[in-house]
Length: 115
Image (cartoon, rainbow, N blue to C red; front, side):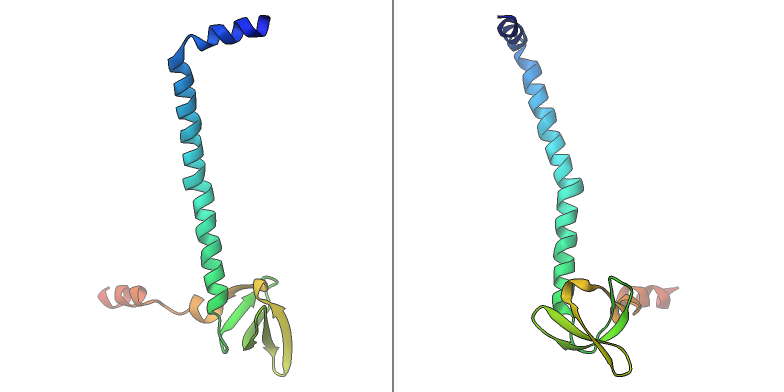
């Protein structure tokens, strides 16, 4: 009986419930745009990066091993880490491509020319 009377009393102010619903909706929207969406973009970029790696690219693995891609397979790479030393690694173990990472982009070249 006590709970019922409390619920009936709080139901009288209809504007407060609407404001609470709007706040909850706004919190969900903020979480989506500041947390979920950037993570989805990052995951998409990483997937595209790992699919674009080709033979001859120099890469760095998650463990920090530098090497050159000798062969691209469905789920793995053959990586040459030293002369005549080849390692088979998972595609998910590659973290960065050295050849593109340190090469200046066209925009950087334009800035250097105009300075």
